[in-house]
Image (cartoon, rainbow, N blue to C red; front, top):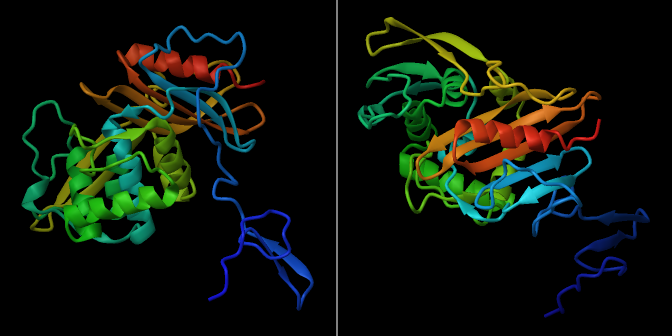
Length: 305
């Protein structure tokens, strides 16, 4: 048996660099994180203090086009993702289905838990995946997450397997999903950096980026008898609703919110500077909604402009 190739950047034959003699052209494998920011430890610029980022919170700002981490605190700390889970739910659905696929609700969509955001789906209701993703990401409907999981995966358990497989493929190795909506479970966890990897992958889908930028969504779906059911929802993102304003010169394109008692207040946004350069900001475990947006503003204030 031939010996395995060595991993050497400049070797004529190696797993990193191999020469195609017939063409004389060298082909080099792209590194896994070639188009990503990498965080192994805290990244705190000199003399930068963010008063609203407490020691037990996680916060980071990533320069997308520059592939540079501008700021990172506790980016690899274990956290509960709350409804930021729905970014992965959307990613898997977009990857393995089409926006016009018709989804049918089972009895499992009925959630009786108090203080849980739902669209009010009933067994037999039908809508397209596109409609479902809008309700999932704009208003964070937890019953819609179950609808998507059952229809795209064939069962919730199979869809969760798909979510975890996708997380592993993306390198989000400190993540474990138990459900598709982010309701609290001690075995449902992630890290800020893993969420950045998942969000970056989801942003490659134009439909995802369009949905997270909407402040309002109105649609008509159908009940079990084919009768119309209209739903009108507003974004949970305070920037899109103009309840919060980003720093001068920064435009928030969109994002996803998440809040549970265990996770605290969480927020992930895609924003742009005056030149249109994209950045991703993430805040996890903020004690209040006000602190969450204040911390995000402090992060965005670090964007050069």
